[in-house]
Amino acid sequence: MTEAKKRYRAIALSVVKHDYLPNAVAAHPRFDVVAVADDAACPDWVHQRNQLYADQLGIPYHKDPQVAFDTCGADVAVVSSEAERHCDLAMRAAHAGLHIIVDKPLSTTLAECDRLVEAVEKHRVRCLVWNRNYLPALLQVRDVVARGDIGALQAIHCDFYFSKDAGPPKGSRREGDPPINWLERQLEAHADGSDGGVGVLPMGELQIEGIYPLAYMRMLTGGLAVERVFARTATHFHQANVDNEVDDLATVTLEMAGGVVGTLCLGRIGAAAHPDIGEIKLHLLGSEGRLVISEARPEVALHYREQPPLEFRHQRLAEENNFLLVEEFVRALEGGEDEGLVLDARGARDICAIVNAAIESGRNGEVVALG
Image (cartoon, rainbow, N blue to C red; front, side, top):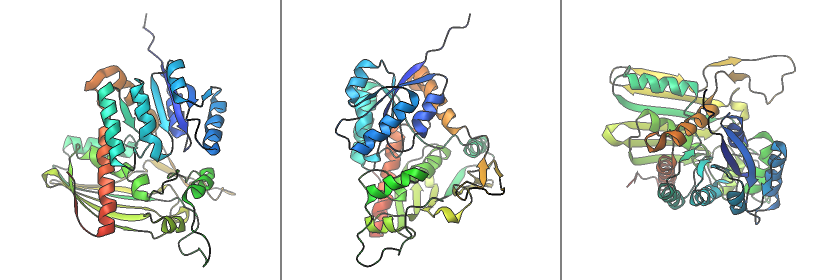
């Protein structure tokens, strides 16, 4: 008789951004999301979103994470708060002995990332940072590189143009109008899912989305260390970014160990710019060949009468990224320290260092060396 596999109990530790992360965990057959928890001192809008999610799942909402840790018998904390609270909530879960799945970006502050890495390693818990490395196209290109089909990898480039709006276009603010408040704009954006930078602290696209393409590069180069960074950044599209002095367009050059070069073009280009989520492509140059791959493939285009204007015309197929990430997390829980994660806390910490270096370089126009 086959022995029943352990079911893991998870706490949704804040659900104020998108709910794709706790939903991905809840959808996996090895997990039960048993409670939502957050701090009592959070503002009303945070409690409203947390309570709504708890009601949808029919589970309790605790306005004290420690109470949830002590009473729910949980194995895992799923952190989907504002980015500035990711590390704090995740550290508290680690100190309680819970394994962690945390939304991106890990943090905008390298010191916070270091504190979380220390807590994770001290308490010997696993920490998965959310990413898109299990999209079908990424799995294909990973296998091509691993087989050596293009020889030794020499250079990698990623276009990561994200076709969502961020409020009024640049130049739309009239003389005398107050600057756009970052948090108010993010709360408004929640309705259409464009609130990736939710929180009090303004974040540019390098901080919000940069972890995705940089995680691609990290995986495809086998985790090569980035030694030097040069970037150009701009506020080209959106008034909220202008008013809050954060980028919505950037180019980044990375000098990696072994002479490998990485380049990245990234921006939030607006919903009118593309029929899908955006123009996201990888270009790889090897000693024996080259490869160009679209992140969105495979996909099918759908066009029909009275189609909603905001519906993506291009629909992705075989898109099991979320399930595969949770599946990998289960393997890590059951396989011990030898079972790696495609992006753990230390890897996400290194990406935070690259992003911060790119922002610094964009501001001062100089190359920034990473220690």
